[in-house]
Amino acid sequence: MRTRFQQGLDELKERLLEMGGLAESAIELASESLRKRDGRIAQEVFEREKLINESQRAIDEMGVDLLAMQQPMATDLRFVLAVLKINSDLERVGDLAVNIAQRSLNVAQEQELVIPVDIARMTTAVSTMVRRALESFLSAKSDVAQAVLQMDSIVDRMKDEAFITLVAQMKKDPERIRIYMDVLLITRSLERIADHATNIAEDVIFWVNGTDVRHNSRVATEPDSDRPASQ
Amino acid sequence: MRTRFQQGLDELKERLLEMGGLAESAIELASESLRKRDGRIAQEVFEREKLINESQRAIDEMGVDLLAMQQPMATDLRFVLAVLKINSDLERVGDLAVNIAQRSLNVAQEQELVIPVDIARMTTAVSTMVRRALESFLSAKSDVAQAVLQMDSIVDRMKDEAFITLVAQMKKDPERIRIYMDVLLITRSLERIADHATNIAEDVIFWVNGTDVRHNSRVATEPDSDRPASQ
Image 1 (cartoon, each protein chain N blue to C red):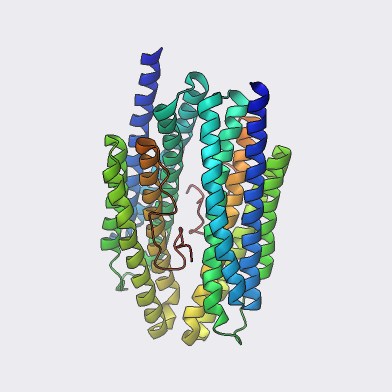
Image 2: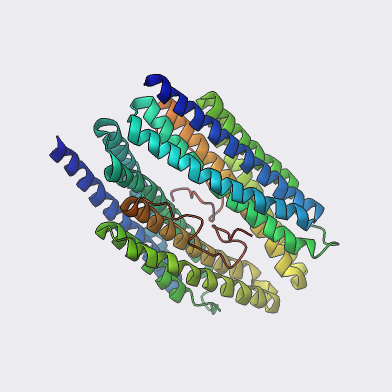
């Protein structure tokens, strides 16, 4: 019985990592769609998101079934609960990649526009957070997860800088406010992906260490962060 | 044993509803802080959010303990899982109320500004969604939860209209772009609260009916919705 249960846990882990791979590739494709201003790449993100949604349902079902049939204890229980939470975070990452891809279609209309913020650099930081968070899950290493928490404030700062730059640019060039707004909302979607990476890292720490690290790991730098500093 | 378990479930429900009350009041206060342009009310939102965070931790612990000690089956298992998810949604509602309150402090700097979108109307719609979602949880009625899902597209539409109005206003009055941006981001926070209400309603349906209604209940109207339409 224990062996079959162990198999179930292993399969759950594998499926979640597959889904993580899909979510990572959705972020990369969304960023590429923006960089190349190519609508076909945006289309690939939409396809990827469908797979992510299917995957989420399957993992949720497997997780709930494991809880119902096997009634795991202690670490195994925390593992399954962490998987269910991470699953939901990855699904949101897919949604946010779709938002970025959709906005990249607007930006593609203005082929000659020079985007005044370094989206590629921000995307790299965010993708790294997601990848590290998934690595910490794969290796069950809470120190790797801790490192992800540290990175969140870097991305928050990038978002704040982008905000200031873009508002200044809008004032200078009001005719293009709409398109700068798309860019601004892309940076916010990226920052929200970073928040989900942080959630994943926190769930790994909860699973591995049995401790809840929320509400004391992070300091938000700008009012609209998803997880504000308690004032 | 069963009785003590039942007591545990009842207590969990009660605590979650209390937390729901805190989250609702945080939304109302944030909206009032904006309407009255009064920083002291914003401060109350920050205090409320601390209580929400404490409450979240306590509920998470209770829920995990119930799963570990009692190993509930079927409906009871789904109930505890739904509570854990709703708990996390309510915590985010608290965060978003803080975002709104923080931005209301910026808006308060411009006492004479006429806000060109009806934030009060949007807040009412969003608060109603949260309240109905919590009612569906209290009464275990999936038809009430279904009604919440229907309301989400109304709020999405309000957000889209606000976006168009505010971009037009920014073009007309570029000196005030920064403040219109605050208003725009407030409407987006409200829309995200509506998304969380929708999540709560979906979790109630999952608990009551044992069915997963995600990815087929909603149509997003604007690219940046948290749950995009699959293209």
